[in-house]
Image: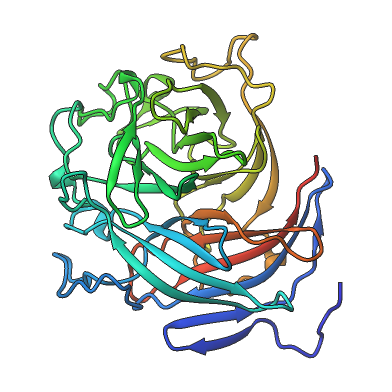
Length: 401
């Protein structure tokens, strides 16, 4: 690849609230024949505003219209436009943030070296009755049989008919929204995957741990199947350790886009480390996925920020298994097979040190590249901190068969 030795590392260009990096890196060829090249790096100012037109501040002082907290995004298939999903808002659910979705233009220039972004629209998310969805934990019903207005949106995919599928970590559930933000319905999950209301996890016996529920969401290339990823193991698939629980396997849950159909399959995803969790999943084809697995640390203390290729082709269907052993699986249960594609902490990417790389959250395919490689876009969650920019990365990838 052509190099530019006269350039002093990444160039920084400032366009109003948009901070854009132009980078030159070497392509890398993995041992499995995968090819990965970081072609652009950009950042949105943490103090940037969205287009919600909301005024005033939240309970913690964060402006109601602050742009940030990116948890997922997806390509619209039209030009250079994307849907972008923030999570439940700042302060870990302690404020009454109005959940929303954005439409954004994201452009990689003809030389594939410059990444620029422009916000096009913001839509507030509402229930079927028109009430606003709120990220506040105070709005979470006490009963596991109710949803209410509480929503922790984490995964987003555009479905046929231009509806949005959004995964809710509070539910956990997957909801169908119109593109202007009105909920139309939900996909049901088994009762044994409900969010636990037991405050002491060491005593909990069944369900999903808080902040370890449905996180990522993928849609098959044919648009017929959704696959939702649990961030961490179910309570019954884990063991208590102090005030927390740990396990070796989390679950991928496949649903039919047709909401009248039952859940299709479940597979076990083997975590590379018991302290990590899944933050995103993106379909490659009908049986392979890109999966972000990460720890919760920021640089320089971070140790684990990786994107894997996960293959479910030979994985056992565990949809009828309420629990699985935490340690050694029975011989007849085969988990998904993973291989490393991108280590985000690899110094060869030359990501400036001020970017903490704490929360890689969203993956999306972009328009096809001229040389046949695929454009892979990654966004980071800045937790709505005004002094922390939202990092955006653009990779050109070729994934081996």
